[in-house]
Image (cartoon, rainbow, N blue to C red; front, top):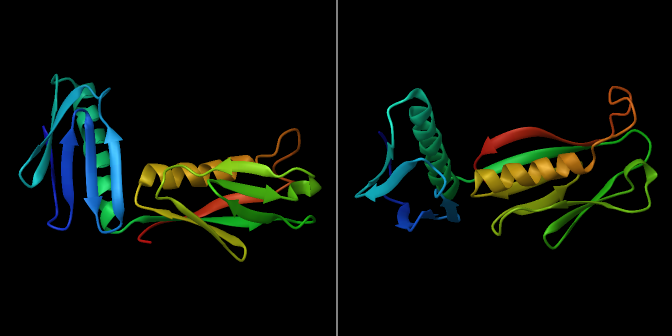
Length: 175
């Protein structure tokens, strides 16, 4: 059994298998349907009880506890990932268009490489040679940063020589 304390500034509710965490920076919602444990909200704490007592059941419980903890941290402080734009010859241009990030002129390619922005509350902005991804949900922020990094993955060339691309270099709490 694991417990996560809920701070006074955060409101946690359970509707069916969904846990919703609301705070000053927004709302984060997560489905715990496939989790082999019962998750309940009791007063000012979230209680996670595994179905069994094996090592695997306890590991699942600790995973669920860390997910709920990151949801609470996210709505209180938020998460920020920084992605560096690196190029040697062709200057890379990065533009945010709606729910997509367009990486233009990568290796002189005519068409833009597109990365999807996950979640509704995730914000992406370009600041000089950095792309800053911010939001209350750790999963959405980290997946968006990974999508941006993966959009410039180099195939059929030596990655030690051709270092152009966008790379995550900073993971921080706080927005």
